[in-house]
Length: 223
Image 1 (cartoon, rainbow, N blue to C red):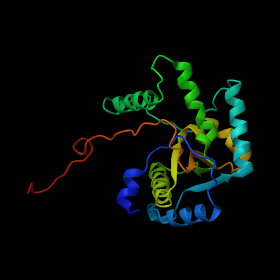
Image 2 (spheres, rainbow, N blue to C red):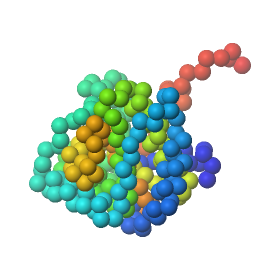
Image 3 (cartoon, one colour):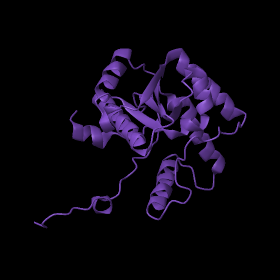
Image 4 (tube, rainbow, N blue to C red):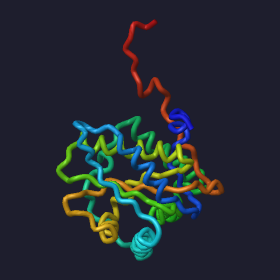
């Protein structure tokens, strides 16, 4: 698979089969992703990879919180601006319509939407998950570095025939994740990532992208 196909076929997959992902495959992917760029090569990411019993324990703990309606943990960073401006706001709304529309869930069925969202805490059935942290004192550029690292991981996963779903949602249960991983206090959880082989029987939407002229401006001689 070339890089163009990897980029085009990468998407947030929310349904996985229980086929294990070999440890050597994950090591190969993460060894390649380590070459992702970062300012002054500081490589600010700290990744934890869970499979088997530890992942099952995390899913169980998170599932128990969902079942009793436990409140989310105090947020450690702001996922979205309080007031998304036009264009970004419309894109987010369109995402929700496509995502839940593919599941046959109407906008007004809040309970069904909550049930669908709860699948996050089971990693959508994935047999492997990655949790990405960075130091609390890092600034915006280092958060950007972490994003480039995660994108590189996802592209290399595609080269291995695997799919993924990056989930900031796990930051809402960062205390539960910490109970299983025991990260140093100076680290903050940015996101989790479900990893595995796609379950093609699960209904999902291929979310579109804005046209090029909406996000890119060419400044040239106009030739």
